[in-house]
Length: 119
Image 1: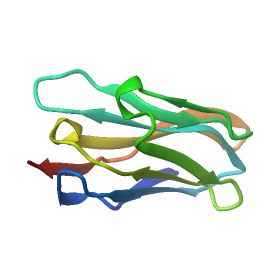
Image 2: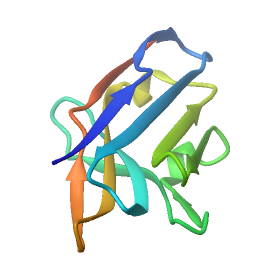
Image 3: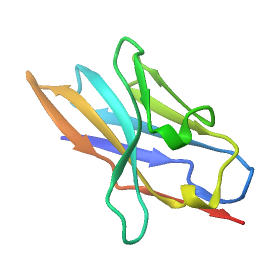
Image 4: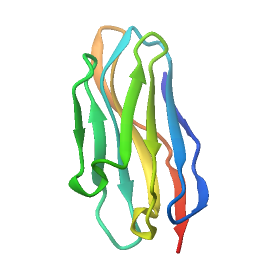
């Protein structure tokens, strides 16, 4: 059993900051690529940022320069630091991870955390 538990969402005014965290727990021997997706009402889920185990990052164009993804490999945690937030960043943010568990590589999703940016 593997779980991804997210925290750090909430309500913030435009220009503010939030930090999301996602911890993978359970029978884990390690994690490969970890990332954050988001889904706004009426829109498709989109990749916000991801990071490989070696620290190679990839960002959605609209968040470049504002968001920073990082990870702690020893603790299987991924972070998303979000600065200068805009109302269009409002969405449910989901953690995603490729997890090595019991000899298999399986992709998991977190339950989602709401981020609301008011104008």
